[in-house]
Length: 331
Ligand SMILES: [Zn+2]
Image (cartoon, helix red, strand yellow):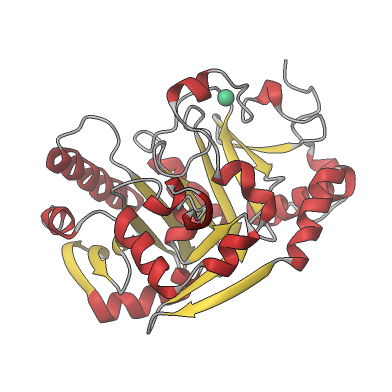
């Protein structure tokens, strides 16, 4: 049985901040959690001492964050047997007793992430133990991006490329403006965006920068964006000859009454470096945040070792190859 106090009442939430909008309410939730949950407070405090370094790839930036708290997530075994044999850490019954949450629509619950990358970091979990899939959940993604958009950026990791709980549907949200791609969106679009679909103000761009191949999808019509997104998914399945969800990571921003969605089609989850032994190994498992220019390394030796050349190789290996990507660029 879930903790009967899991859902935080409005009256209690307001002791830690305003709940006038969902985006202020979740910040109040985080304040409450830092006050009442030692592990959570400690892990957020640790973010103040985190080391970051930056590489310049001409018009785009890649930041490396040394974050030892993410070791479990980065090294997570996500094969079927390992998943089957572990207790699901996102199921409501298994949440720590201190964890509190705010409901979102009838299916989801917004929780603070106790192992943060961002100063504000949330996991939005389905209340049921249902598999991670974007099909059927993309509208919720858009609605969350909109409602949280003035302070947070939303992201989704596919079950085979970054989600550490591929068996339990969830999104994440982190402090707005921290991932380099958020501020590069407009310039990358102007520099290398090629329009591949346009209707009203809904536009889909194929964008190739110095490191990545991705899609930018923007507009203010929810239903139109949803329909273009599903067309793109269908095209990916057709091109790759698969029925399952194609490997992808998604970023969702909302500003000036408009969604800006970034879709990273992926070739694989982990680069070759992850599987090397000893001194050759770099423990990195690129997911939405890493693809967006904030690469998380939980081991200091990797933080020291990573170089421009290695970053190029990592992106080259995990992004969808050029031929396949351009095959998608005609939906
Ligand atoms: Zn679960």
